[in-house]
Image (cartoon, rainbow, N blue to C red; front, top):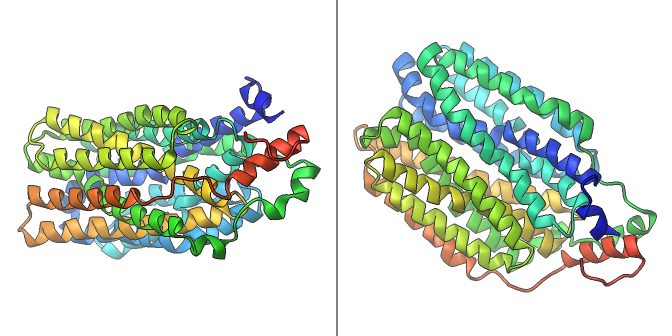
Length: 423
């Protein structure tokens, strides 16, 4: 039975989850957004590039993610995950390491971030989520939380390590180090990551295990989730990609600013584990509203952070909210629309995320340049307002179960021979 399998320590799904956790820990998600701001001052000192120009490279990566995510999702729905993930990890690591060879020609910076955007979701939780969903039904929320905790662990360790290398060995060696770190996900992914084999009965029911892409796009739930994603990504990436520079300009020392980035990741771990346990028992729609509210509150605190202690509090509150919000999204997609076209639909929400993630850093970089090289507190207040708009919109999410429940019924029917039992 599915229930007893997932509860067993030797259940193969836990090994798959461990490998996926490791891959996510050293993927695009914790590396690029959380170290980007650490390179702004060194690159400006080396080449004289403006903040808005450097933010444009990050925006290009985000736009590239937006364009290619549905196509990657289509591949993940049709082919074994390792065929997509392993090449993506290799390209991602090579691109990171190549940034150590930057010259004053900013087009090289842009081109490399374009390559990073192509590979990004082939390395991140996006690529691993569908595989993890095939292995878990009873503990689906917990499994997704543990998967995304990998990103939180990476965001704790990688920013201060990167800052230390920049301070003691220079920014070029820091990029080389990040390229090496990105390769750490290869071995376990190659050995363990695979979709759960389907039973003959489950294959016979496969056409009924989820809504079509066209059907999902006709629902209000999908578009509410998409707009929430755009708003939260605008606020999150606009803040996080500039956070170290913002805090240091407001009087926080560089080491405290790097620690704030780490605390944001650490708080995300705590939030994810709690939400992962709760989401299998409490309405995920209401959890979505709660964690978005925390993220908005954390953003508002950071707008006025002038000391290390205040910045740590704001980063922690922000981390609990944003870390948990990333867990709730795939859970809701699977519940509303099933697993049949999950990766394509998840890819479309990543497209929405990338739209917000691209415009947020561009906007705040533009405001910085217009203000004469200053990050004014009101800029961050504007980001908090956008985040609170996502909170309000989340209240309109439907609270009932939808076609995603079909997957659970089919899984139980395949394992126990009794269709209709709820996992």
